[in-house]
Length: 564
Image 1 (spheres, rainbow, N blue to C red):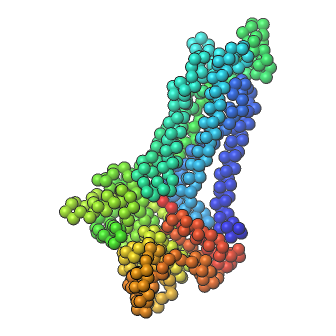
Image 2 (image 1 turned 90 degrees about the vertical axis):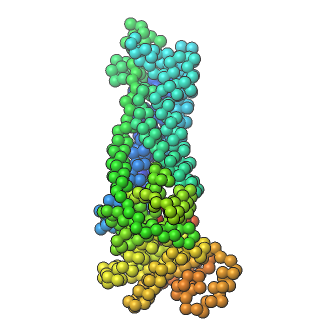
Image 3 (image 1 turned 180 degrees about the vertical axis):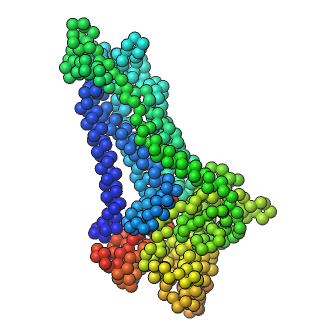
């Protein structure tokens, strides 16, 4: 527990402040609507559900203000660049942008549910009070005229006894926008699940753009002022606490209490979301401008296991290790943009990506490039954007873990290391790299073999054989593969990859690996970088906590995961 606090204290503090603000806003708004004289008569009809609806609405405004900020990728990349000299703790928070985006979305869902349930009770009470004919206070308040030309000042949005709640819902601005926003929110949240995002990215991509309807609906949701309160002038003429009991005499000239006047609250949601929406629009304009710059494909390589490599050039393109780009192919889909990690090094005169067939869009793209007698499809590129892997050279010891095609950010890192050794870069802070690559099939290793072979040779020539310790793990194997490897185990190179390092079968024993690293580097700061599934992330995160020392002078493991 102590190690966990040491590694995550800033994240905990940030979340505590965010949750605290949500609680404060909810309680403050609840007490305001529960005690304010302005809403005394409204509470007579609705009770405490008025305060619940308004308090949740305020929290919805607050979180809707925040929801777009974590996905302003250009802004985050800019902040990451300007914070290059900030502490590691502050920079790591930028890597949790999508996690915070999801938490804010869950909070929006929670307050949406509270808001809807409260208003269901509200409209039921509006309906019942409008049906009442007993001459009670609520029936008098509900029968106030909607005809403003005759001096009417209504409190109940249901004008007639035969008017249904459904009619009010679908004919009022607040009701109709509320329905549209709720449907959009449900579709966005359900399509953002891990399974749909990984297997049907197109569904996730298109439904997530329903946020446009959500934001527009939120901006105009308050127009019409269905929830109304007594005007200041009316309160001054007759305070509700004194005049409520004389409601039967409101129209009597001998009574000091006059019939109360009501007005709707002006819409406020747009004030909360205006600045983030403008910022996000600027972000999208910038990204659109970048995406329209011409991309020249200089080389196309088809690797085994249906992996496509594209080498490209683009004017003014500048990258760092571990960054990613968004790619669009208009001939396949003019609207879909998919993220891919850059596999080239900053020192190279081109940038490259490796694309594995993992869905309709990627399969169609690979098929388009496989056609020999067809023109090369046009590609549009947006980015690059920063990730946690940019910080790899800030650590004395780095542990790189890639699963399948998740090795791509580390290809960029290892290539950059090769160039740094070529140029004898003495500013390289990193002294040791542990690299783990976990694959299901042997063919996946082939496209990366040339780089690892070059690194092996370079380390030997420079006398730095111990700088890179890499391990390859094959998880999808049968007895024939194992038997073949066992018979050729004494050979100088691995029978499966041709590398000097032998391939291991199964998955790494992470406790053993972390224990060895902690023992070998008792006073080092170790950065652990993963590009892989969430289950593997949980295992590595636990090991980072378990093997980090509470003494800051001893070994510390910092976990970093690619999120895009």
